[in-house]
Amino acid sequence: MSKITVVVVDDSALVRSMLTEIINRQPDMTCIGAAADPFVAREMIRNLNPDVITLDVEMPRMDGIDFLSKLMRLRPMPVVMVSTLTERGADVTLRALELGAVDFVAKPKIGVADGLRQLADDITDKVRIAAKARINRLHVPATAPAGAAGAPSASVRSSGAMATPATAKPATTSPGLGRLSTEKIIFIGASTGGTEATKEVLASLPADSPGVVITQHMPPGFTRNYAARLDSLCKISVKEATDGERILPGHAYIAPGGLHLSVERSGANYIARVQDGDPVNRHKPSVEVLFKSAARVVGPNAIGIMLTGMGADGAKAMREMKDAGAYCVAQNEATCVVFGMPREAIAAGAVQEVLPLTQIAQHVLDHLRATVGQALSRV
Image (cartoon, rainbow, N blue to C red; front, side, top):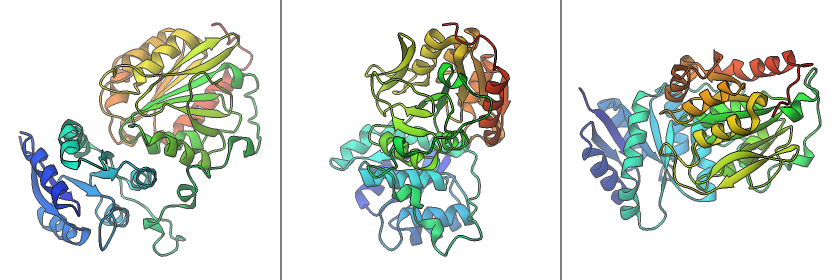
């Protein structure tokens, strides 16, 4: 079996050395080149044709985002970003995922050598996943101004503290939803490739959609920026979940990185429960934790959506959701970056429909409208 070949791109000689060492210690991968900037990397890619690239964000001569934009338009290939864990680093990393990077590693700001050693398993796992990922060419609209592909969009630049508050969103209605918005809750689980897949689903929902609760595998420090970015793009309001808050129609709540998210009942209302705890299926937040609470607390009023991701997190719990009367769908293989989580959910008999990503939101809305007039609130 051939080894996964990797080119490391980072302006730090220490980081290049550490990543090379970590990769070469693995029996199934080898670092075939290390470049200090994108111009050297470009020649290495052309001559060595690696399976995966690890790419730093901040580099001289051309930053990682500009290079990634050009790479994904001209020669799309699996990329794992190496990003410093700062607020700006979080925004830039989200932009990289938007451009087509498969995943990212949060590089420590201090104690880089020791920090990277501690992250060795995470780094190599993500390289393995990237090597199997489905990569699509980045298409830039013909009307885009020169250089637009490498620059963050207005919505990305305005994310963070300056994001439009939920109360400023215009109220709209969707024919046929009515009281379903207060009785139903949509649950979404996602991992690798899920930041963009979740955006696709949420951006297609109307402002009076049922509440949405999301677990996306993401480390601490990134989910608040991610929620703000989505809030600026969607009709519904999107935020990082806080413990004890009521789950409202027209709102989406994202599990904070490093914490588990579940739902509980408080009188007639559903509330978010955000708690620390051990990783479940190696993840925190875990889709399993969220979906189990959906089965236990929401039952037939839950709608489950399993999106792209590696592994089996959430598959068993989604079957519990379906057995409790929930309606569950999974993203199809052709539109997944990684088909692992949807495949496991399908294999567990947990889903009623398998759909392309672009059809999921509309299918869920059609299902909701078809249930008008039924006795929905049975929990």
